[in-house]
Image 1 (cartoon, rainbow, N blue to C red):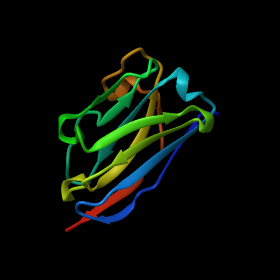
Image 2 (cartoon, one colour):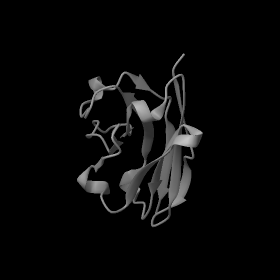
Image 3 (tube, helix red, strand yellow):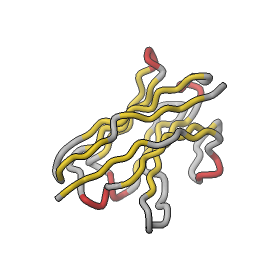
Image 4 (cartoon, rainbow, N blue to C red):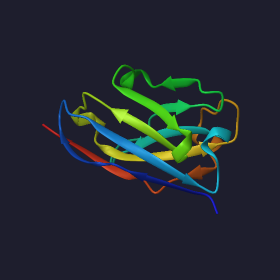
Length: 123
């Protein structure tokens, strides 16, 4: 059974850093594109925050470029999202997703979703 389990969320002051983890089971992260998404109450979902594709290419939403870094540790079958210079507007539940497409972009292209981990950035 495929499972994606996010962890690493918490409360951090603005300007601080967190590293989120997405531990996968039932699939090999090297065989999938892994994307990070987020959602906050009262806000519409924005686009995909970050993705590491099957071939290792990465893309980022403009608002997080230069602050967030997605990476993969194949030995641990885990994908990470390093978040630096966090801002209040980064407060959200963060979701890890896996898609089998070559370069998925939309949420429906990701067949597997984790349960989410909450990130709260305080002033």
